[in-house]
Length: 335
Length: 171
Image 1 (cartoon, rainbow over the protein chains, first blue to last red):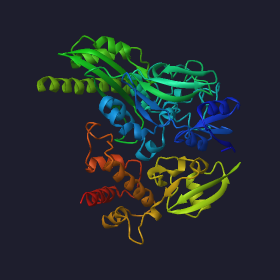
Image 2: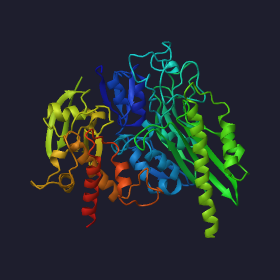
Image 3: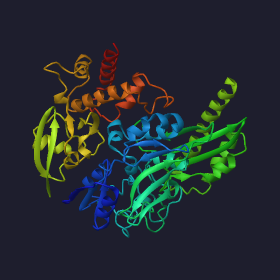
């Protein structure tokens, strides 16, 4: 690890300025990903701007409904927040399915969104990687890995975004509040992360000095049910092979509205609008959900050996809709 | 580049001047001689470095000492109360919850955190409905302790110990 200057930011504008004025500066929040990557020698900032003292650590119910989550709120606190558990259970479940208790106590909302891929070739400083060193090639293309993208990849990069939380937020139409050198703006989480294209070193649409200060969730639709399903190679403390976040409102026996995002299958959380369209207005029978998944995953291009990921994603959607429709049915019987 | 850091470690105020690159784990072990937290993977994957940082369990290998200036750090060494073992420590002994003992200080700190998180009503990934207040049964304990690896494979004893300590709490 190379030496670095440590700066404790006092306010968001000061933090942004401290990163903007230095060509090799990075924000530090929980540190669970950045410190790890610095130890691996794959990130090497010369100035670290600590943003944990910015008082961005509250969760507030917005006047018109919805939730404003400070970027510094720890993953553990967000998952345990009563309003999240009650109104956005898929977000609580997504957070709880990620990392371990110790890491969730450190990791923050903003840092979780901006965590880097866990592609083993990105994380190995000796291996060629277009994300880490543009132009060197993609080792994962001909390599062995369980976490290569099946959707939206390019010949330059097949990395996946590892965040469960971001997948749930993508399904919830969350917006990131971003402080940059020119002031504040909003970026939908769905549009925050990029596909790799020919610039795989850029994970997001943000500039280096852009600081996420909060994430806002719109109010949940009346009667919405939601769930998060994560398939992984061991029961706990593992990244997703594929996951799905679903929120749905059922009316009688049909899907009145739904929002769906897949995780672990692309360079960004994958909002599944084709699957949503295929389901709205229809009964969520297993056959209908499989058809909706197939519509979404028709453009999947799994590398050799990765075909299972597409099947897992489809199966996850079927499983979740089965659960949600079951709960909706129980609700009707209660009335 | 160096920085001055003040920590309260197991109830004692300690100061050190250290490189900004020093992790909290290395500050404790190499600079302050506090060797209860262990270095296993040094990447947050094994949990042997777990301490209670401002009262919450955390991997001390993934946070810089300089970023924790002023923090309260409790290690497994500082859990005993006036010579009497913490109930979690006693439960680990009573249930043969270790073999070589290397991961144990991290396991114990993590278990103390688990009990407090459960007491606060926090759900886990295996809680059927996140809105429920979970009971610490075996599945809940296994999920909540998944950030602590034991290469001796003493998991059966560890689960029993955490359960024993939790039931002791409930009495």
